[in-house]
Length: 474
Image 1 (cartoon, rainbow, N blue to C red):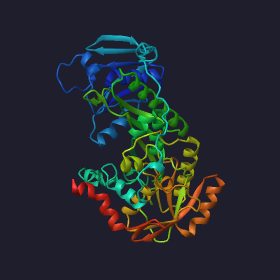
Image 2: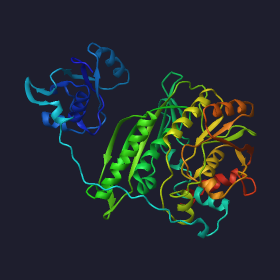
Image 3: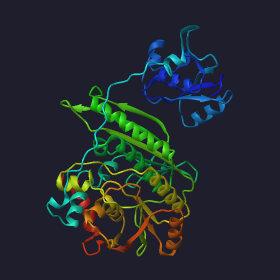
Image 4: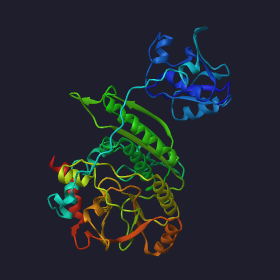
C-alpha cells in the first residue's frame, strides 16, 4: 500500500471505521487521513466520535491507487452501490481525523495496532481423553439398522425443507445450489465460478480443540476440492462460551491453534471473521463451535462436478486410508448415545496430497462424481451419493476386515469417494500410484439398490424415504 492512495467506503463489518482504517494502515506501515465530512451518514448531525465507532453494517473500506477512483466508481455505479472518496494514506504513520476544517484527532497508528496492550486471559489446555468404549460390550446391531438410525436422525436427515425456503437463484448465476459438498456460483458472463462451503464440528472441538480446529478447516478444504474448486481463502465465525472460565478460554485458544496450523499448511488463508463469546443458557456453555466458510475458484465451468452418481457400472474408488476411528462418531452417538474419546487424527500431509491429486483428476475430466468422507464415515457418504441420484452402489467388503462397523462408519480424515468411468480407471490408477496416493476399488454403481455385499440391500426409494422421514414426522 503506497502513500497518497485513495480511500473509499462501500461495505464495512461490525468492526467500525476506526478498527478497519487502523488495521489497513498498520499492515501497510503507513498513516491514514480521513475527511469525516464526506462519510455518508444515515442520521443528521452525527459527531466524529459516533462516525468512527458506529458499527453500521453493509460497508467496506477499500484502498485504491491514486487516479483510479473514477474507474472504480463506474463499477460501483453499475451495481447501484454507494462509493465515496473519504481520505488518503500518508507516510506520517498517524491516524488523522478531520471534520469541518478542524483536526479532531491525531493518534499514532502503532499505538492502536501493533503496540496496543495485549489482553491475555488465563486458560488451561484440554487433557487428552481416553477412549472408554469397548465395542465388544455394546448391544449388537445390524449394519442396516445402524445406517437407518443415522440417516433418519435430526442431524443427518434431508435439510432441503430449510434451504428451499430461500432464493438461491438471484441473477440466475447459481450453477449448483446447496445440498452437495459446496454451492457453485458463476462469475457473471464468464466460464469461471466461485464454490462456497460452510463447516463446523462442535463435538470434535469439545473433545480436543486443536484437532477439532484442524479438522473443520480440512473438511471445508475437501468440500471445495470435491466440486473441482481450488480452495482460495476462508472466513470464520468463532462461537464459544464464557471466556472468564479458564477451560472455555482454553477451548478458544486451542481451536485457533488448530485452525492456524491447518490454514498455514494448506495455504488456505483467513481473510476475515468474527468472535462471539458468552454463548450459553442457564450457566451452561455451548460447545466450542468455530464455523469455517471457504471459497474456491473453478476455472472452467463447462462440466461442474457434484456428488450425484452418474452411470451404471462405473467404478467406486475410495481415496485415503481407512483406520476405523469410531470415537466421537455419529455411529456411537446416534446408536448408543456415546460421545467418548478423541476425534480422528488429522494428517495435514495426506490432506494436502490427496486433495491436490483429486483436484487434478477432476480438472482432467477423469471423475464422474466426487464426495468427501466426514461425519458418518464411508457408508453415510455412499448413501448421500445414492439418495440424490437414480443409482445405487454395490460395495465389496475388504477380505481382511477386523470390524465391519469401524470400516464403514469410521470417521478417518483425508478421504474421498470418486466415481470413475471404466475406460478411465487405468489412467486414474497410474496417477494415484505416481503420487503415492492410497486408494481402494470398493465396488460399482448399479440401478435401484444400495448394497453392501453379504450384509445389506435396500432400495434407493426406501433410502430416500428414510432420509426424509424426520421432517415428515415432525
